[in-house]
Length: 336
Ligand SMILES: Cc1cc2nc3c(=O)[nH]c(=O)nc-3n(C[C@H](O)[C@H](O)[C@H](O)COP(=O)(O)OP(=O)(O)OC[C@H]3O[C@@H](n4cnc5c(N)ncnc54)[C@H](O)[C@@H]3O)c2cc1C
Ligand code: SF4
Image 1 (cartoon, rainbow, N blue to C red):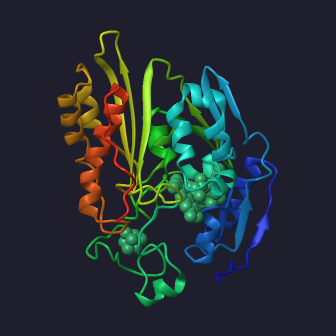
Image 2 (cartoon, protein in one colour):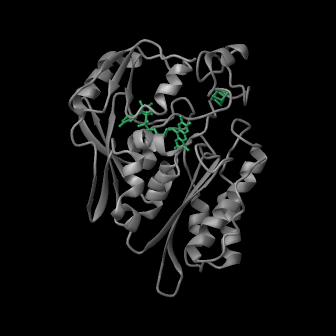
Image 3 (cartoon, rainbow, N blue to C red):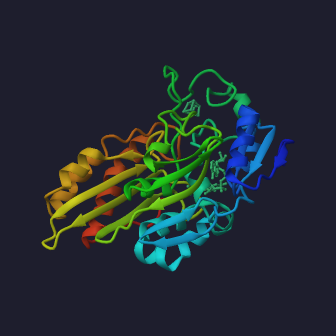
């Protein structure tokens, strides 16, 4: 049986106090929210913090507020997000992405803040310490080279959050609290460009709130590809949002890809291509053909990377077809 390593467990009562504790203990400390990702990772010694700073007791970081836009306290569970009537009605892609994370028990404990900050993933890294030792480790933990791309000086572990692509597609912002105060940044700016330093926020900053703007007039969706219909992380995620005029012409479009790079990827060229066009089958196929190009899956997740790359194109087309009210041609879950 894998066991947790020993650590000190601190339970601050404000976000600023939590940030101060993280700053004081530096690289030896980590924040923990629901612990659904962090605790298994600790058991596999992917992290070895001496201090855990729990976010459970922070006031005002739990709950859902609707007032024009949507405010999600970072400690709100995914189950609360997926079931909230106003989120379901006005931000259905947010509810859908939250509801597609893992399985019900993990969504009851896992938080929206933890989901946005969740560690990047790689076949050579999400393994026990024994397994990783047997192959000589990799640079994300304990080693010196990347086993997927040995010539690379950066880690290519995949951003695997289900909600991050949706939040970026909806242009959500995040409140971060540090020792000196708070700041608000686009969720898109939360992510770095390396599988190790995958968050661009300062290590001591606590994510306290996520704010999603009013998206009245937009049609939004999230599609997730995974081997099984539950539990599995995405191997492709597609968030899509379009705003069309009364004649059906696209005024604005947002397409964000998940699980195909070290960070969520905005398909900028496809977004531009769609503007001024109608969501007709040929246009959708062309947009999908543009959208999948920035995806960079490597051989470090479930199923072959070449197939995953091809599936980005298909999943983008299905997402846009769904928004257009066209048949999506869905197949049963992949079994081999
Ligand atoms: C079997 C299994 C399947 C899973 N499947 C999926 C899946 O399909 N899709 C998916 O997206 N995830 C999946 N996960 C990962 C995880 O369950 C979710 O991402 C969950 O939302 C993480 O939230 P948490 O509160 O448990 O985060 P934690 O595990 O507590 O923390 C995760 C990371 O975020 C940091 N963190 C947490 N909250 C904050 C905050 N407020 N401010 C700053 N840093 C913070 C922590 O320091 C840690 O580094 C799975 C995990 C398991 C074990
Ligand atoms: S991408 Fe390379 S460095 Fe990063 S976790 Fe995988 S093998 Fe390790």
